[in-house]
Length: 85
Image 1 (cartoon, rainbow, N blue to C red):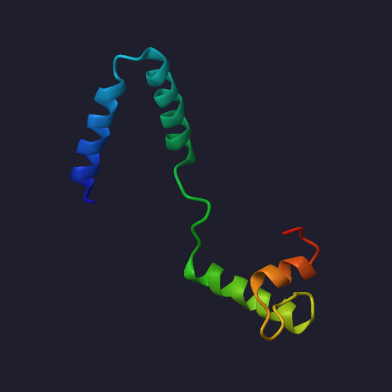
Image 2: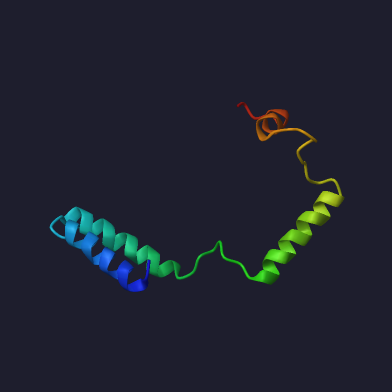
């Protein structure tokens, strides 16, 4: 979806709730939070990503990580780790 299409969709959606003061208040509150956030905290640079991979590999080599056993599925692994599934 292009920016123009998104803009049009947002205005259509806002028109649908424009007559409801409680919904408009919720929208205003959410927009303030969204504007204040400014950036996605889940984004990372390529260097940060590679550094995380490196740390993970190092922890794995040191035996600090657990992994699936050969021919083990995720459900079995989680049960082995103590999760009630």
